[in-house]
Length: 173
Image 1 (tube, rainbow, N blue to C red):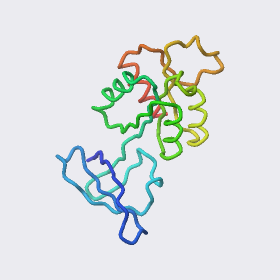
Image 2: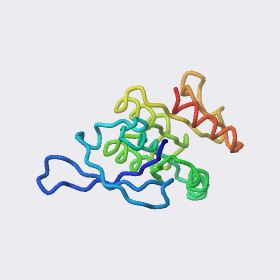
Image 3: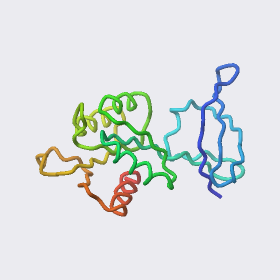
């Protein structure tokens, strides 16, 4: 049996072993207390933690950067019924700060942010996360030279099925 568990860090009283409160989305809200022997950054998203009752999988964490509030609302609605955990950034600077603070499995960014380019954000993300994937979303691919295009991009407007297929492909690769 597989569970999707969402962890919230709780410091232990001794400060040595981190404790987590895990709420199972498939267990009707029951709360499970789990003690792990690795710090939060020690488990990559998607790795399972085996227990006697099954495998606990941590959700894939996605950072979405877009300066258009309407698009951020669309992304929120798209991901609301999925097992993905998302963080939203409305500027290059905010996204850069989140990249430095957290470990994300995928970056989805608009090309033109008010205070920077999505391609520069992708470079920063890849420098910090190595093989992590990114997805560039743009209103016009013609704005970029072919050599500037990342390995994965979508042109707006996009169909939901195409977008979710690109997200799945990026997270599996």
